[in-house]
Image: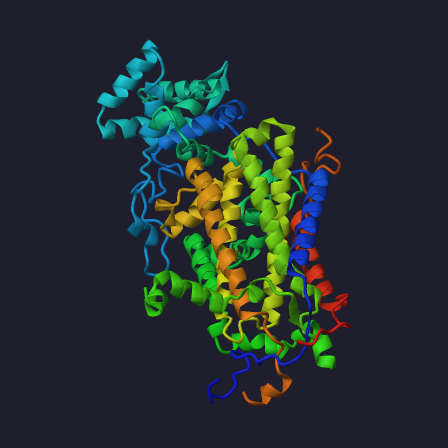
Length: 313
Length: 208
Length: 57
């Protein structure tokens, strides 16, 4: 070894003491059997959760008003998705970490246009329905200022929306085709056809549920179900599981930051929490290189318990 | 061929290097230093055992595809085995981490052992997360629609789309298991090469 | 096979502990509590076997 001074938090003394018998294969086998038995016992006793997925059909039948209101917000550009920004659209610049606009720099890579993707294109896929076709034609031939005039008029009347005899009724005066579009989309959703229209947007095969999930998340129905199960962000939901099952308890620290200031009050909470966790992860990773921190175990002396037989001698 | 020519071959040099660093008695030791005598030492091997069960049950779930476990009570039971072995995996891994921290287990040239362990932990968290969003049930719908905001805020969402089931499932059953297995293998081999960290020398505290 | 996993069902709505900013499900609390208990037990309980028989090497 070199003549440098011994650094107790970096160097380890060379072991000159005795050795005891150690059967590594036997130890591994015992561990596998014990963990295996424990896994089987826990599974037999507790099982695992499997709450069925929510469909747009289920949502529109359980709460047609919420669905129709969400559809109107999509047209109006006031839904969460419509105002999201990157990676879905240019409506916002996304969150900022100090001066860094990470989301904006990454760009719009998964383009979503709520008006056409969630409302117009699905309606256009419906088989020939003369009234709907007329109203779709009216919509697509109108200028964007005319369209937004209709939508504004419709959205103003949304608080008075009712659901009567299977139809969405909104007392509008100058909403153009919007009433027919929203009502037809609601019918489509209640029949289950919208679920298909949203996922098959890319072709015959699909494994991508970005659009129906974004649409579902824009309503209040999914969030309401989640709040019942204590799964929302302010309920430490990230680490929770449906029912009484333990969840991703190892996310406790990530979840914790969302509950306290300045994170809980920030519009950049997500990126701040991520930045914090990245920094803390780096500290954990590079702990052996950080003077002070790497001295903690030597100073708190828990090691004396672990190696007590050694120190007794 | 001359001996020197053989000695210069890549194959020969690699074999000699491996044999020098990790002779069979280090790879599969039959003794341990006497100070290795505490229950805290079992949590590393317990983590490894749980990882084997996680992978085995995951392989069983793969046989009939991602929706099987919703439709079959046997499938659901295999899902339970997968879930609980994951819980045990993280349980054991975190205790292993605590134990190694309090032993200062990075000392004596073991920094890479510590760091590969940490990266394995991070990769496992991502593997667990992609599993949660690949369940194709309410849980995965909710977790993915919530988690997208976090990852989108970092810009990562432009590549890593948590709402894309196919992508998440591929990461969960191909990329991240490969990473976790490779990292674990390197970690375990480093432990064997470097051996278990010796106790702090009480006198040495005077030095610093 | 329906008995599998149904002995102690955990599917009904969970219980939660709410204390100041802390809100945690009983399931997670049990897991984290067990981890701490297991860790302390691993430090304190005597490890059998190795102590006595030393092989000199």
